[in-house]
Length: 130
Image 1: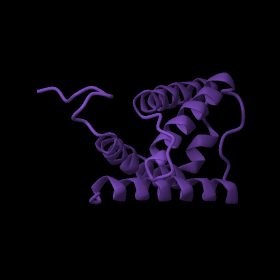
Image 2 (image 1 turned 135 degrees about the horizontal axis):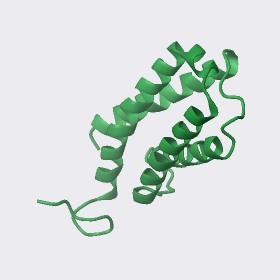
Image 3 (image 1 turned 90 degrees about the vertical axis):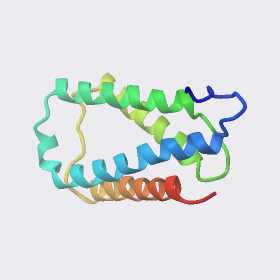
Image 4 (image 1 turned 30 degrees about the horizontal axis):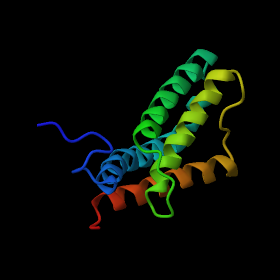
């Protein structure tokens, strides 16, 4: 049985937000931790690899934004912001694949910590009761 499409009665937006948070949250935690552990690997990336990564980010972000472009003052806006950040970050990597990527330093550490924290929060919200 198919779930009702977006905007149809029977599928509240919160359910959609929780389902997306349950996918995005653990993904962000895994990405933040593993990219921080392997930062040296990114130093040797060719522009083709950066472009491919940007394409994947762009498509994932666009998919999120297409199904969840919700601008409200509650936790669900993090799902929307994550989609926009992925889409714009991916587009940047596609436009400028030869631009410098993350370097080992305080900025990268803060960025990875933020990614893990947002991921942990979204994971928590995906399992929390309403």
